[in-house]
Image 1: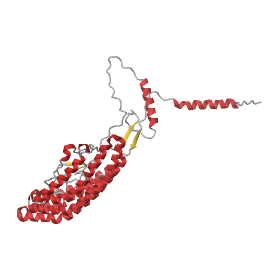
Image 2: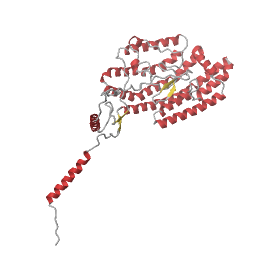
Image 3: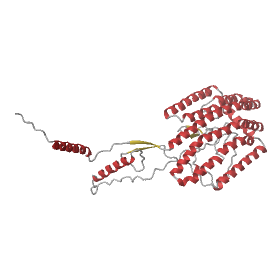
Length: 427
């Protein structure tokens, strides 16, 4: 006879329940000194929009700058031919150098050439657009353009006569002779609509980025709102702002004229901008926009108070705090006589101070003469360097806080010895 024993249902349920409790509590135990996993969080802040809008401004300004340089070359061709011809008739020995100057003014895009050229201006505008591409692509385009331009410049340097005497002769002709100043004034008048259009379109291209950065700055620090509004006013009405970009190309043909007409025109322009500067000096000191950081990377390990985490931030901070407390309980008290280790100061709970963003108000641009200083460069927003003489959309290198105020604001002088030099930007 076989005997069979079956456990009672009550005992079976109790056993299952006990096993479940044991299984569920097993994962709670963690090593006392468990090393936390490093978690990286990339935070896309509101200033990503500002960066995109600023790139849009670069594209608009670059495209408009390339078109302006091309149209300027077409319009100025008869004036440059007349300049070279008149100088050569008076001094035939300068003929070869003037020929070299003329050819390279229209065909040489190299940065190494010491005088302004239309191809260089076009190339620089294309580089501004290329700078908006991702670094590998944009850098490759810019490097390729410069290699191609340098090859052309080297070919001209090896085959054409020295253009330096021709450059000096044309500068003297445009600046010091009655006929030359008249020719230059006529050239400036012919291209004035091009540069007024460029300055207006370029300003409007950067305006969305300027307004967005200003809005972010106001959110970050509302106390800066008066200075931010003052900054916008300077961008509109100063001699280096939108108003200057409209007035200067129109006024420069009159200023370039010889005799009392040119002198009187210069005085009128100076008085006009001095009056504007006096009014602007009544405003609060301008404050350049300081948008939020574009990207913040935070590491949970060694969690600093000023790091930014999105998503599960409370849980991550709680886990880090618990681990820090557990570590502090296991710390050993240093023995007397042992070297004392100075710990770094605690992290500041306040947000890290953001660096001011780029000045988003481009300087005005007028037609360029020969003025170009080799080696002088300006840093562009994309990290490249371009010659300072004729950068089509150069960002102001000085912060807006240093704009003229008080007595200094009433002393604006827009005079220039170079027929094509812009106020606030050497061209």
